[in-house]
Image (cartoon, rainbow, N blue to C red; front, top):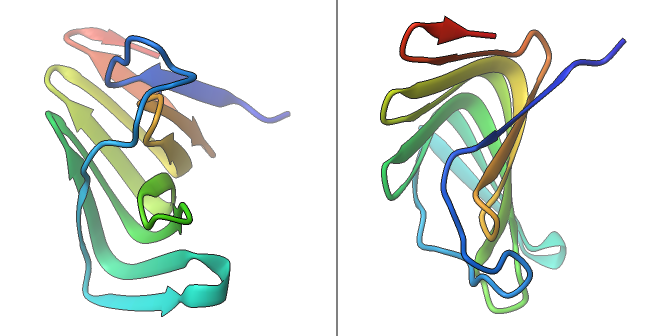
Length: 116
């Protein structure tokens, strides 16, 4: 059985037309795979957008044709924090246009004292 935990960490008015927002990324190493339009961040990977921070062992970032971040696939010790909301899991996918994070693999979430 697969358990998915989806969190709306950031809001967008019109999800179908929302432009990708700026994301600050860092890690110990970076490999760019041009033909696939991917950037692979390894070791202490961290992404920040507005008030949201995501950390993991590795990110695979999918870029659009105009080099905007579309999605971030995080693996290994994933932690996401947005204000009083936090989520943890083995893996997660973040959609930069919608602001939705889907956490998989032993997902957990907490807002204030509430936990799932």
